[in-house]
Image (cartoon, rainbow, N blue to C red; front, side, top):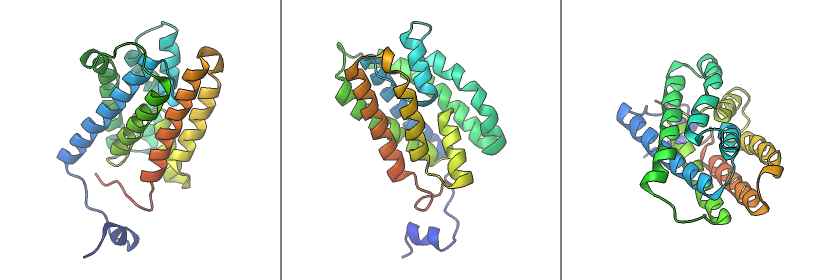
Length: 212
């Protein structure tokens, strides 16, 4: 029997995902990400990318996180449309809209009692975010912003998306030193490391090719 790895390395095209599989992956991925974001908001944690900017603005009391996340991602659709294709752009727009909605609804459906521990929240939330992103990446979608840039750079230059994502996220977190407490900063770094570790392990072009 031919394994998936053998098929990929032998030059055979992978089987395309069905529309039902794409839809299920989008629902699973955005649910994981939305719940992880809701946990981060409750614990006062930060993350990188456009979500990190949305967190910072939300903590300043400007607007709800979901609305900020949706609006900040709007300029990145031009890059997605130009370099990743119309299908990827549409799926990403849908994913961003769902995450914006679910990150708010999760807090209402699953109300957290009190303040969450920043360290355990960073670890579990980061793992949820990472697995959610993997589900989307493997079905040619993302949650916009830096994810679009990371996927484009990996596709164009071969640099792993996880490494680039972690580097940019680390810079954003370090720029936030004056805006959060030390436990929240450590929890945020744990979350960024957990998320990037998952992406680095499971989103590798030599092991898996998205086909939708």
